[in-house]
Image (tube, rainbow, N blue to C red):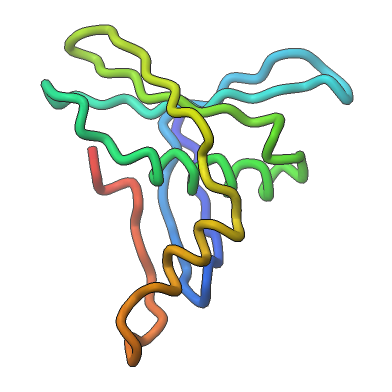
Length: 114
C-alpha cells in the first residue's frame, strides 16, 4: 500500500507517495525500511528521491531519521540498491536553496520518477 506524504523543504512543498514501508521490531528499537520499486531496465534512480522519502516518513512518524533506511528495488532484475549516506533535512534544504534566485516556492512531486 502506498503511503502519501507532504513535506516542506526550503520553502517548497514536496508531495509524493512512498511505494512501501516495512517495519521491524517494536518500541524504541523499531526500524523502518522504505522501498521504491523501479521498472526501468537501468539503474538510473536518484538517491535524493529516497532521501526525501526517508525524511518525510521519519517526520510523519515522529521517529529519528537514523531509524529509517531506504532502498530501490529494480523489478526487472530483482536487484536491491541501498544508497549510502542519504542526505538529511539540512543537506536537502541546502540543495534546494541552490536554485537560481527569483524562483517562486512551488510544489514538487517526487513520485513522478517511476
